[in-house]
Length: 571
Figure (tube, rainbow, N blue to C red):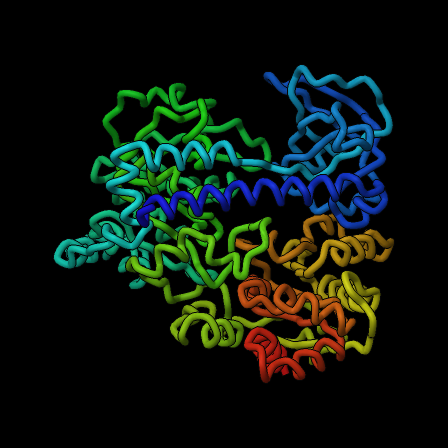
């Protein structure tokens, strides 16, 4: 077996292992009692149907909102609608729309059999993409483009060579583009690359702005551009940035997204765009999976611009690579890795960005337009070789409430990063003590005039998110009608977002539990994402037992040492 065959065989084994572990985890979850699933934030129930209506070929189902809704579903998530039998034969595939003006809403296929009005539950779905991955691996081995172009790039053989004369010309051409120096350099490196280039975008550095500038220049060249990412949300965000910069057809190939589709033209499939015989330029937004389905299997592109590739596994990235001649990858290895179900040492190594960065060239964006100077310091020193700097416009920004806070040492302008140490013990996935402190911090910020949508709370476990969310339903928070815009979630849900202030609750205070989950609790990329969502204020809430545990382990484990350095940066 040669290197290429061994590589493909390894990927196929990983794909099958992912599917097997994913289904085992899902079935174990669905088998638990509904109250346990609800408490874990993985289900909503019992629900009563308030109204149904037909829109195009789908049925909208509106439930009476549950008072016990602690689920961490997001708009667009796939869920299982059932009579509390998510693993039974009669579940209905649904898409979660969240709270609408008609209730808690989902959309289901038009032909779905809905008879009962009461007793419904919504459960987290298991998304199995194995068939897509295996078809892509088959094409990788079975086509000349796969064998001679894509495989050599993935194996570190060729493709990242730069024509520096062309690079200089594009740097000059992009000088009036509104991009900063590192963004111009990154776009020019892509344009001058023979086959591919990587752009690393640390938090707040305008990665999507640089991506849009690159797409604009590709359109000027008459290129057929694919804009893709693992999530629809990322594609929509990028398309909205691209639209003002191009004068050509721009479409998203997918079902419409009523709650995240503003300004975007959707088409059911590539044929419906009218571009089958169009020589370009045009821009098509589509997920990798649409390229291997009836929606867009016939589409071919000159260039694929691929976003969030630090969260995209290699087998997913192969799909756009097979459909385009050149590829530009945007991501950041220092932020969250792909979701991996099978046991692995470090999920970050599964990403296409990590694989290509070992051999291919990459350019880092170096100016953050989000973090003020004190908040930029810790991530810059620990993740970005000291090269990440706050832009002059935001470096001096500080957290200032409209009315003086009760605790100016915590919520005053200085320092930008602070911590609250609480003396609880024996807590694992939730902490009443930390939830109460988080709620008090939130109330103080709101009383000071900060809008609910400018506050974010990051927690490691869904149970703690549910506990904090329940506290926000108390009457004392009812005077802020937009309290629902205050996000309380795990770090995975916050990547790509920003807030004026972030509260990070570490929750744990059980030594044996911390020993068992050491890698998860102190995973560097999770820490980086958690504290780089804020513009001017980060509040770390933790137990004394957690700090003591970090101090004991810091001498022999670099991850606890890093987490301890974060707490020390807040002193």
